[in-house]
Length: 470
Image (cartoon, rainbow, N blue to C red; front, side, top):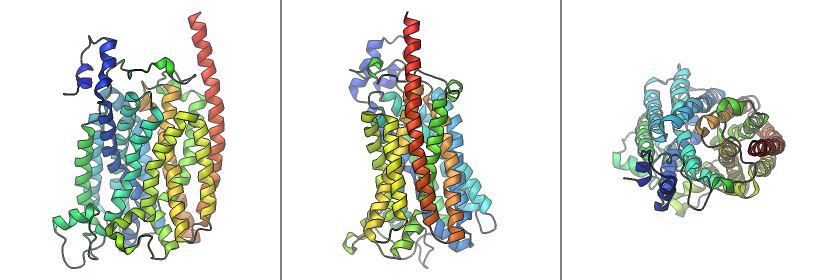
C-alpha cells in the first residue's frame, strides 16, 4: 500500500511525518496515471478523422459535423466546474472513473442512434455525454499533479496534460484505417488489434464507423478507469522535502475560493485571454486533416520504407506530437520567466504561424506548420492551470480552474463552427487563418494586461500581509 495514501488517513500524523512521504518518489506515479487518462481523453483532438466518413455516408455539410466537435468542447468546459468541485471533495480517482464511464457510453450510444436523419444524436452522444466524460476526467490529473508538485508547477502541469495532446497521435492513424467501410471480408480481432496499435495497416477495408465506435467506447472506459487508479491527492499539509511555501515566487496568490476569484479583474482577464488563444487553435484543429489533405493533394510525407510508422509524420500526427511537447516546453519556460510573459511569446508566435499558413503549399511547409501550431496550442493547457494555481492558490484549484476553463467552452463553439461556416461559404481556408492569426495577436495583448494585474494583486496581498503582521 502506498505510504502517502495511508498517511493521509492518519489524523495524528505530524508535519515531519507528512513531509517524509515524498521520499519514496510515489508522487511520480500520479503523473503516470495522468498520462494514461489524458491520452484517452485527448482523442477528442482527432475528431477530424470522423469528418469524411460521416459526411460521405450521410451527406452532411462541414458545419453540421463541426457542431458535434463544438458541443463536445463546450460541454467539456462546463462540466469542469462541478467536476472540479467533486474532485476537491472526493479526490481524483472516483471522479476520473465517472469520466471514463461517460466517455465510453457516449460512443456505444452513438453507434446505435446516429443516422442521416439524426445529426442531433451525434450531438447528444459524442457532444454532450462524451464532452461530459472528458470534463470529469480532465480536471482530476491536473489538480492532483499541481498539489503533488508545488515546486515544479509549470513543468508537471505540462507533463500531466501532455497525454491529452498526444492522444490524437496514437489514435488518428489507426482510426483512419479502421473507420473505412468493410471491403467484403471481416477483420479478425487479432487484425483489429494490430491495426489499432499501429503496427499493421489494413488491406483497404476497415470495420466501419459504427463498429469502431463500439470498440473505442469499450477501450476508452477501461483504460481511463485503470489510469484513475493511480491518481490521488497528497495528505493535508504535505510539501516536498527541501521546499517550503516561502520559496515560491514573490507575490504568489493566497488561497481563494471561486466566488472571491471571480470577483477579481485578474480572473476576468485570464478568462478572456484563454478564449482568444484557444479559439484560434480549435478553428484549425477541427479541420486539420481535410485542410492539410487539400494542400498535399493525396500525397504523403512518409517514405514507403516506414510502413505503418509513417503515420507519425502525417500532418495530424505531427500536430499531436508537438501539441504534447508544447505543454511540457511552455510549462518549463513559464517556470523560468513567469506565466504572462510565456503567454505573450507563445501567442505572438502562433499568430505569425497562422498568417504564414495562408500561403503554405509545399510538403516542408505543411510539416513545419503542423509542428508550429501544435507546439503553441499545446502550451495553453500548461500555462493557464499553472497561472490559476499561482494567483488563486491550490486549495480550491479544481473548481477554480473549472471556472477559468469555461473559456475553452466558448472557444470550442466559436472556433470550429466559425471555421466550418467560413469553409462552407468560401470553399477555402484563407479567411479562417487570417481570423485565427488576429485572435492570437489580441491574446498576446491580453497577456500583457494579465501581467500588470498580477503585479497589482501581488502588491496588494503583500501590503495586507505586512499590515496583519504589524
